[in-house]
Structure formats: C-alpha cells, structure tokens
Length: 290
Length: 263
Image 1 (cartoon, one colour):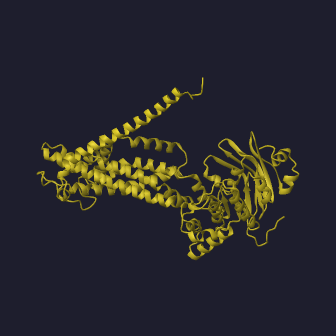
Image 2 (image 1 turned 30 degrees about the horizontal axis):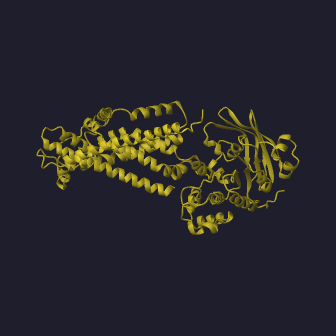
Image 3 (image 1 turned 90 degrees about the vertical axis):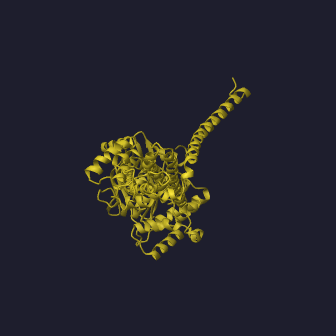
C-alpha cells in the first residue's frame, strides 16, 4: 500500500480538515449570533428609555420618572471598594504561595481549598457575609459589608489568576536578578511583579467583572432596592445595578421591563469600560516589557 | 602562572568534597578543587555531568531549587560559602554570573545597570552613570549603545545582550565571575567578541567558565577541569594547567575526550 499519496486518500484528508475548520467557525459564530440577538433585544427595548434623565434620576414608582443614578453610583462604590480590598490581599496571597511557601501539607490544603472556593455558589458567600460582616462585625447593611462579601467571592479567582501569571515569569529572569545579589523582595518587586502584571490585571478584571453582575450575595447582605439618596461613605446603605435591574424586571408593568433593559445597557457599558481599561493597561505594560 | 598584581581584589575559591543532590539523585560527588585567583579555570566535559550545577553551587544559586542539597565545603577567600549564616546577597555581589542564554532585564539599557547598583546601595546618579560607562567600555559595548541607553535592552542583538549581561555583572565589581557556556547561543563572530573581552579582563577577576568548545577552553583557560558522569553522578576525572591537560593527560578518559573521540 502506498503511503497516503493516492489522490482519493489525500482528498479525504483535506475534506476532513476543511470540515473541522468549518464546524469550528460555525460554533464560534453561533455564540456570537446568540450574543448579538441578546444585545439587539435589550437595545430595542431599552435604548428609547436611556437618556440623561435616566442616568441622573432616582428610583421612582412612576416608570417615566425612574432613574438609575443611585444604583450606578452604588455599583461604582461597591466595585472600587471590592478592588481595594481583594486586589492587595489576593496578589499578596499569590506572591506568598508562589514565591515563599515551601511545599507542605498545609499549602496543599490551601491550594485544594482555593480551587474549591472558586466554585462555591455566590449565595453561600452572601450568607457568610450576612453572618460575619452584617451581624458579627456589626457593619450593618452597608457598602462595606457588600464590598467585603464581594471581595471574599472574587479572592479565589484573583489568587489563582495571579499565581498563574507569577508562575509564567521566565526562571531566567529570577536567576539573573538573584545572581546579581538581589534579595527575594527586590526580585519580586523589580522583576516578577512587572513581568506578571498583565496576567494579574487580566485576572483582576475578570474577577471584578463577575462581581459587578453578582446579585445573590448583595440580596443576602441586604442591599436595598429603593434608595433615594447617594451614599456618602462606605458605611451607608446602598443599591447596585443588578439589584435595581432585578427589581424592575420583577414588576408587572411593561414599562418597568423596558427600564430593566435600559439598566442592562448601563451595566454592559460599565463592563465594557472596565475591560477597555484592562486592555489598555495590559497593552501599555506589554510595550514596556517586551 | 599567577599574573595577578598584588593589589588585585580578586579572591581564590576552593571546594572540598563538594557533593550536590537533586532529591535522591547526585549531580556530582566529592569535587575537591582549587580555583586560583585571577586565573581562568575552564570546566569541560559532556552534558549532564554536573558542570552547571557545580557552577551554581559556588554562588549558592542552587538555594533557589527546593530539592537541591549541597554538602561539603566551599571557600571564597576567608568566607565559608555554605555556612548557614553567610550573607548570600553580599556573596553574589562578590561572585558575578553569566548564563547560557543572555538574560537582560526587559528595561532600558541604563536601568539594567541602575537597578542592581541601587539594590547594592549606590544611590548617587553620577556614580551609577560612571560605573555603567566603565562596565560597558570593558566589554566594548559603549560605542555601540551610548546613544541609546534609554532603549530597551531586548532590542540589542544576542551577542550584544550577552556582553551587556557581562558588563552588568562587572558593574558590581565582583571578585569572581562564573560563566555558564556564555557563547553557546551566539554566532562565531559574537562569540569571538565575548571571548576577546574575557581575555582582556584576565588578571582582574577569578574566572570559572563552563564550555563545550574545547578550542575555546584551550585558547582562554589557564587551568582546565574535566568532568565526567557515570552511574553514580558526575565527578572530576582530572584537572591541571591547560597545556598539561590537553597535551599529556594522565587519565585515558581525558585523553580520549580532549582528542574528540567521545563525549
């Protein structure tokens, strides 16, 4: 038998290759089409309601007066505070686990638990937040309670992404630094972190994007749905975009459904801005590095 | 043979019954060597016989490998290198190391020098610049890069990068230089340049170089150490002045290796 040089054999192989290529393309476009339909549907419903008044008004029982201002501000507060808590802790934990921790039974336990924690349903974090922060520490139904709960929720993801990024730093870089007599901290500060920064940022943004859409834990720690003031500080009560959207969507009047759609557009816009910032920072630090 | 001036700061190194394990596997056993001050000592031998591990144990870079265990004795001048209270940061300032693949930091050329110098407490801007220039001149790179010190070091060619790494080590004024096959990733012309500058530095530093290029060892080394690996790990078969080892080695293994008959 010849080694696959016959015409029929070659044609069959090329057909298989083409078939695989086209099925991949078809599956990819199916996802994109679904997403496009979703966005189109939301835009069709909500765009007409989306104007400056909507962004700057408070909640109202009359749909034409209702706005999303407190929810938008609440979400920005919540996410900034969550980032301020979760990023330093998460990156520090990742540095410890990758750079300092010696292999031990305790560390294996920590690693297994991190992977598990990333998969725990968010409502469970909500219950935890309610028990510890709202009741235990007496922080009440404040932005701080919500942010601490969200921070717990995103920590495993941030830690795991940061560890991956730190692990991907080429060993030659560490060697070069140590061989020049740098201490471990200098090596981490000057070489490992700058080189891992794009990967860490990607993880952080992915985690925060997840947090921005989370509703269940906020319901548990008691984010209000009817807020007629802007929070003054982290101890104020608050509402957030997904809560507001959920609230509107669950009302019987058709107008509120449109308001919910408009709220979704705002939420997507916030997400888009965050991802845009991440891409920008990543691009800049890549340019600096390579 | 010792061509070194009396005021030369470089120190000699010795190892006594030095053995290195990765986990349960020995990389080399019972290596007792004298590395004379201000001379070039070349380590030759086939791959996997522990030359690189030996080199990294001298500046305790092997500390970075968790499974690595080094026993025996290493001295640098009066310093017990393997003693637990030895300050490895100070040790590695005294012992510079150049790796097989050039590893410049992904910063500007200037920062490649400023960073380690600052880490070692050189704060004065003028002094950093002066040391950078002196080190770059030592490796013949100054005229090539003087106009682009702010550009990324990764934009240099492979040979220039390796000379940059050499200069970066020199800027810290080490006493000993460890070189791990510094020319193996370079083309012959770049390789010759690195070699030339190594030779021009002779007498200012104690140099230990791992090389697979026997001709290079013969050209630049004062002394040669021949490593060989058998089932129980690497060991030193023979060491001596370069001519003696290449012309009339005692051990048949060495004779065959330097003639290019195996390995």
